[in-house]
Image (cartoon, rainbow, N blue to C red; front, side, top):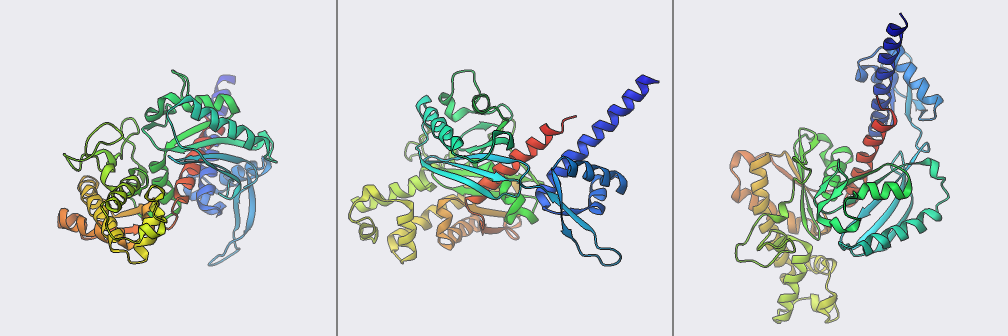
Length: 408
């Protein structure tokens, strides 16, 4: 009988942990909900849902958030996460910066630090990064016990389950995963996600993709990355590398890409390519407002200068951005035929060009896609911008932490 009782207790504990995990994730996504909604969501009775909520209240995870509205009868009590129960640390890394954010469970940024730190595939880069991170930690008025975990968003071929970035293998000692290295140093769980995948996840949870199931996010930044959302799930492929649209060949006799191949889409449509093309035009004596905006110093030219010139009506800059959008639209037409999305969300530094870049993208897709693929396709500029990446990294981390906290 004792063995039967033990097995029964074990089954109850497994179910309780599953409900606790689901509760954390649901409240993180929806902010507030009622017992009735939770019972329907969990396919459990109202007393069972009430018991789980009460337990989580006693442990400090859940708090009352007010009273909801009711069509009839007593208005329901609303429950939400206790946003101060835990905090997370997010490392948002790109080619030119490393940004640190401390966030609570309601996605509020409590502390942040921005570093100009050019991403290099060397141990020296990692030494500088953790040195700055050590200093950041030392100045935070938050005890270590409140930190739930660390999330890392960065470019590269990232295998999230293994914690590896295959594009930047030299950052940590051979045989050590990037997440293992950071986890060992700061004694907390660490997860890593590709920056474009994080953007897609952020748009799905909190942005324009919330109402859709099949979405492409195109990140036009220092490289070109494609986030793929299939049936409500971010698609990573067999090893997590899916979406490297920037490395399909777009021009057989083009320039050398940093990946070692010739004519990648990155060499035509990234911010780096745009700046290079503008500098080449200036060197040929092309009349443009860019010479004035850069005080006749083409070496200082930035994507921001070009976008500003576009908005000022500079014909040379408008042509550059339009040509870039056309080439990108050709590449996206391939992705549209492969994945048949409902919407394409444009994000990244060049998304700031707004219709100057979305119009040529749309025209190219209309030209190169079959009608049935493009007739209902929508192309939108992200409303979240860079925040989508941060929120996606946070959501990805919290999903993992909830599973670890209440493991079967």
